[in-house]
Amino acid sequence: LDAINGDLSRDKAYHRMVDVREDLKLVLDKPSKYLQHQNIETLSTSGLKLPNTVYGQRKELESLQECYNHSFNGNHTVAIIAGPSGTGKTTLANRFAELVLAEGGLFLSGKFDQLQQAIPFSA
Picture 1 (tube, rainbow, N blue to C red):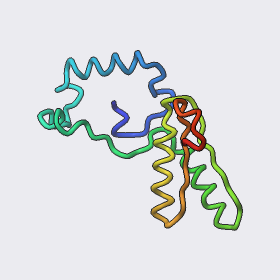
Picture 2: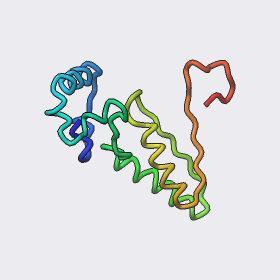
Picture 3: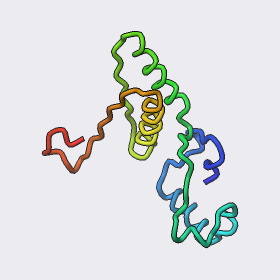
Picture 4: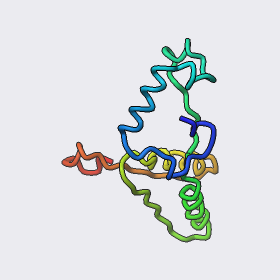
C-alpha cells in the first residue's frame, strides 16, 4: 500500500497472495490508520482510486520506449511483454500504449485467454 506514493522495487513487491490478504485484513481492521489520507465516507461508494503509475517497471518501460524510438529509423520492431500472472504486464502495456498514442503512434496489443482456446484470434 505504501507503493501508492513512490516506486516499488521487485524485492518489496508481494510474491504470495496470503501476504496480500493479511495486509488487506489490517486495512479493514484499522482503516483510519492505513487510509488516513482517504475520505473514508466516500470510499464505500466511489472505491479506492489508485494513480495510473507503473511501479517497479521503469527499466521495462524505458526498454519499450527504446524499441519505439528505434522504429523511427525505418527499423521493424516487435516487443513482447512476458511474465508470470499478476506481475503488471497489462498495466505496463497500457502505460506504454498511452505514451505511443499521445505521440500519434499506432499501438497493437493482444492477450491470451486460456478460456477461449478454441476461438482463433481470441486475443
